[in-house]
Length: 199
Image (tube, rainbow, N blue to C red; front, top):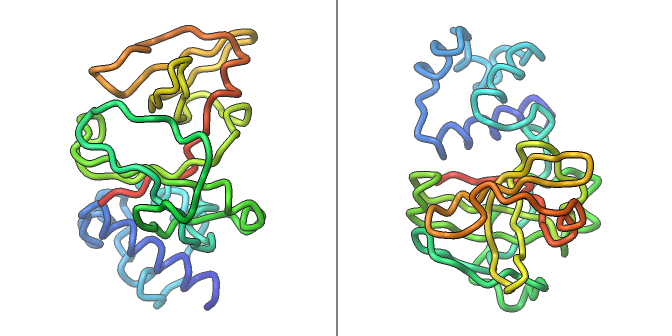
């Protein structure tokens, strides 16, 4: 499969996941031939890919990634608290979710895991969060992470980085850590979210 086809298939899947029609989505972005690009009747331009990726909340690079099956370790209802996954036991998977994994990451596929969130108030619909173990130190401002608090409970939130501190804002309205300022070393207790799959 060529890159153009892979990109088109990925965009088609993302539009379907999010419930967007091709024509209205394209018109909203000012790309009136989006359907022709998705059907590979016209080539993608970088400018159009940047618009589409931005509106879908993904990077241009992720549109041409390979897919791999990632184990779903937890199924979290509403905003309930959950046990932080300390290790990935693929044999205990509740199911599997295909996720775009950068080619250079395929060798470390055993470090990826997923958590299904059903009815979570932050997202408003079912999503599956795919994270990579022990990658908190790679987090950037605004990234979603899964944080293991001192009690071993998992908290999903966003981070903001400072020279010697990290601000963690939980997306769980019922939990603690609403703008918690932590030592920068706490990034070691976080797994960076690599991808969010919407249903």
